[in-house]
Length: 265
Image 1 (cartoon, helix red, strand yellow):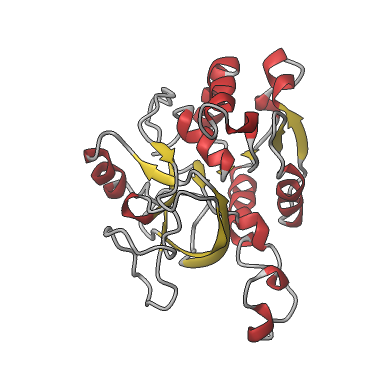
Image 2 (tube, rainbow, N blue to C red; image 1 turned 90 degrees about the horizontal axis):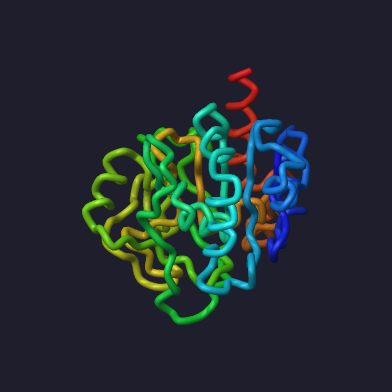
């Protein structure tokens, strides 16, 4: 699998690590190597765009790297998804996928942008733990069998919005609003369309959206960092819970992708 690097991406090491913990063989691939043709996306089975601050967040988080991919390897990306291969974007990677138009996306993989990730309503960088709830009726291959998960958020621009509000209904009906912030003490399912108070919803995303998938369910992006909860001892409450050392909640996402690829071969 390919974990993209370069231009301010800084979470590639831990992203590679969690995929390898889940059973994959990972390779750090600089974006320029794909643009120049030294490497081809078609040589890999999964693509991950990690978190970081690509291009220093100039012109908006994810904008410049999104354009680099959208125009530099446009057909490679489209063919990758059309051939049934999974893609994940985490935090800055999610911003990249949204701003290059791969998420929420469309059946044609046209790379037309229809949403964005705006500044947090708090007006500040949010570094805290959040609870996610996953949509049960969704095509997303990354979240199969998942109900809730505790993960850290680390971003300044994570508010999911669109200039076409009717699209929110469309994405909800198609199961693309995969991950949403929820009150941790409520019963499942408990996701709400009404924006939850801060800091339960750390950025005040519309409908509390934390992550979305494309219509195929292959492409998934989210603002929180599941790779940062790969061990029970990384959890915010492990000491009071007296948790035994083992896999953290975030690993389930990566196991799902590896299982999907293995079953498809």
